[in-house]
Length: 237
Image (cartoon, rainbow, N blue to C red):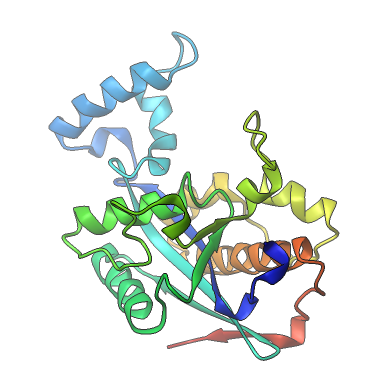
């Protein structure tokens, strides 16, 4: 099936998320109590306090927020990337939703992300609902049969039915010899770069890099050549 895909019909995604506030002590009292309950369930030992574990809050849509969505697509020989980012989560989600509604539909198109079915797609959907936004058809999977859901996941494709472990995008990039733009940031650093360094542009570049890597990985699965650096175009507006 993967060999019959038209990669120009696929929208490649990556998101970056952070905790709702910069540190545990800034949480509203109600959310502090709720996080305390969450921390009890995710701690590994008694030394893990809610304060220590709050650095992981960004991976949970109820305690985090999206600061960047990078979307990439192939057009002729070009790979074009557009990012939606900023302090206002509502506005970036609204912009992304409007792009999906205008240009993409589940009958003709697919979304593709790495670990997207476990993270990116549900996170986007949850944050859209929290922000009072209507879910676009590409994201809204309620009531759909599995074959009607237009979501690809490069990690799921790699599992071939094996659900025992997680394989990172970085590892698969190395395995397939995918060259990625050099950068000085990884996922564990995003919250610090956002809250302490106030450098959102750096995070956007990282998000765009991973979006490109997802595309390169799917093309590798299909036995197709990688996207050349000179064919990458960043859409500014």
